[in-house]
Picture 1: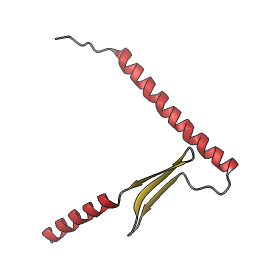
Picture 2: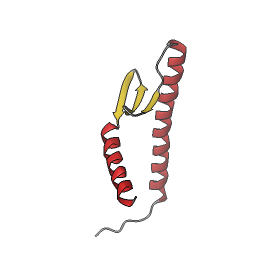
Picture 3: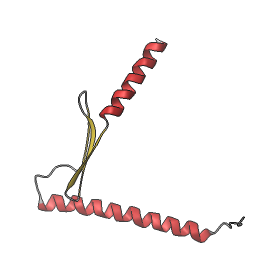
Picture 4: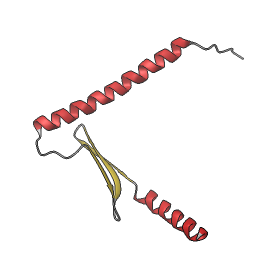
Length: 90
């Protein structure tokens, strides 16, 4: 079995790599926001959160593409479980 030694270099490199990746993503988001505001005056918002009786989703606009994450099924199951628990204890 190999002995592994604690190396501060590995931790430092992982912190630097994580910081650079987060900075890259933040830079892309900022550039996208500024480009939309200058070039396209009637653009959709970058982030839409919809939570009403009929729709439960998050919509993201990034680099000209629209991504939608639907939470309707999850919301339905959580609502069923919570109503069951509420009726059980009341």
